[in-house]
Amino acid sequence: MISWRYHLVSIVAVFLALALGVVMGTTVVKQGVIDELRSRTNAALNATHEAQKEVQLLQTELSVWTRYGAAVQERLLADQLVNEGVVIVTISGVDLSEVDGIRRAFQQSGATVMGVLEATSRMALTDAKAQQDMAAILGIPTPTDQATLAAEAARTLGARLAAGPPETGIPDPLRELIDHGFLALLAGSAPASSLGVPGQLFVFVAGAVQAPAVSPTAFLVPVLDQVVTASRPTAAAETTTSVYPFVTSIRSDGSLDGRLVTVDNADAAPGLVAIVLGLRDLLRDPAAGGDYGTKGRTSGLIPNPAP
Image 1 (cartoon, rainbow, N blue to C red):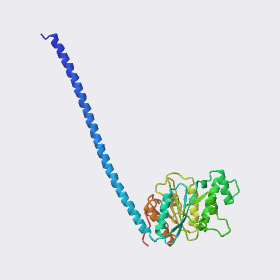
Image 2: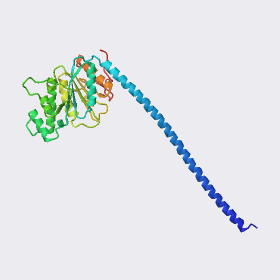
Image 3: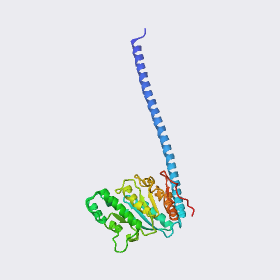
């Protein structure tokens, strides 16, 4: 007969075995989880190291291509617009470093940038004082609505740039717009009386990562339209990252498209080359307008570089 003590020892042994099994099982599971996490961490670290190597490689390649683009740009533009005068028109909010890039491209071509005109935020005519001052410049009785003033301001500036400076003794609307803060003549520019002289070329520049105070379609395009209508060689340019339409609106305008040069990547070497060579072609043939860049409806990246 099996004693009670034997039963007790057996029962205790069973429970001890179960407890030991639970402990051992838990330890094995935890170790397995740790091993899995360690494996994943090592894989992530390896992937990060590979990505860092790839980034470094791409940065090296980008540096090489940037230097190559600058060298090729200088060679392509050399002597393409010797002794030509250029006027750049832009709006507040455009990165002036991009405007300076366009200026340098013209210098490489042998041209001289006579001046950079910037439409300031005051040209938006959002306050009563700005509207009164503009009405006085334009000779329009006040009060009048903002849209009428803006349209007349664009027409007046466009006519002034297209026709050139007025005769001595006649008020210059360009000078008045500058004096009243609607336009700014940026550093390095010639006097207002030297801008718009017959024979000068024009570049209208827009594009930014934020919407501008002055609408490029409501202001720049009407100004540009009059300059183009006067058969002045003209280019319209915007930056690759622009969040608002300018060049695209011109390309969709049947009355303008084909009569000027449009470039949608003026912040890159191909765009700068396209602006200069496009204007060179317009000087040779007023019907040689073209659309260049990367945003669709283009003739290619650059015009034919051959002389």
